[in-house]
Length: 396
Ligand SMILES: [Zn+2]
Image (cartoon, rainbow, N blue to C red; front, side, top):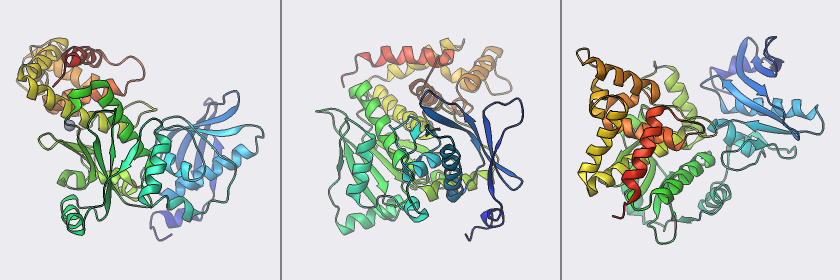
C-alpha cells in the first residue's frame, strides 16, 4: 500500500462487532478507532443475509475486499447458511462478484464456494472485448450485446481526442427486432464495473421497449470525459439532444474512477443534489433514466412542441400553479406565494436539482417514476400518468 490514507490504518485489525445494544442485528466493522461500515443481519430461511447500511466514503477497494472476507469468515462459523449480501453499492457488488458472489443484476448476491482468489484476480477482471461482452450478456438475459466493428487507427485517434479516454470500444444493443440499436462506448479497462455497464444497458433497453419510437434519439451512450463538468464530477451524465448522444461520466465505469470520484467529492461541499433512487436501483439506473428522458422529451417536442407546453402545464397544475416554470421560479425572493409553495413541493417531492430548470424537473421526475419501488410522491405519480397519455400514440 502506498496510499497515505490507507497505510497507517492497515496495521490495525479489521473487526466485526455487534452494534450498540438496542440495535438488534446490527454489525459494525471497525479498523482501530474508525468505523468503516455498518451492516444489518436479515436472515432468511435458507440464507444468512447481510445488508450494507452504510460505509465510509471514499473507501479503498482493498478495504471492500477485506470487509467481504470478514463477512465470509463470519458466515463460515455459522454452518449451513450461505452468505447473501444485499446492497446496491456498485463497488461492493463488483468486488463481491469478482470474489465469486453471484446473482441476477439487481438481486442480493450469494457467496460462491470459498476460493483462492487473489487480490490481483479481484482487481483485474475480463479485458478482452469478447470476455466483457460475455460477462455483460450473462447479466442481461434476453438481451444480445454485439461488438461494434473494429475502427481504423485514424478513427481511434480522433475518438480519443474527442472522448478524453485512451481506449474505448463499442457495442450495439437492439432493444427489439426492427428497432434501431443503441451504441454504447465504454472504456477498455480491467477494472471495468461490469454490473454498472449492464445496468446502463438494461435500463436503456427497458425504456426503449416501453416507449418505442419516442426513444428514437437514444442512439448512443458514451462513457467519456468529453464534458468539462463530467471531468470534475459535478454531473454523472449529460444528454446531447441534437446528436442523440448521452454522455456518462467515465469515472462511473471503473473501480479506480469511482474511488477517485468519491475522494474528490469528499473534499467538496455537496452541490445542488439530484434525487437518490431506492434500492435495488442505484445511481447508474437513475442517471441513465434521467438522461434517457431528456432524449424522449426532445423527440416529443420535435413532434409537437405543444406537447412540451402541455406537459409543463399539467405538471404545474399538479403543483398548484399554472405551469412548471412557475414552480421552478418560485425559488426567487419576490415570487408569489403559490409559486413558492410549488417550488418547495418540487424540491421535497423530487429534488433540489429538479428546481433548477423545467427540463431537469421532468428528467428528475422520470428517474424517480422509473426507479420507483413503492408509491412515488404525488407529483411523480402524476408525471407518470401524464406521460403515459402524451406518449401513448407516439408513432414518429
Ligand atoms: Zn439533466
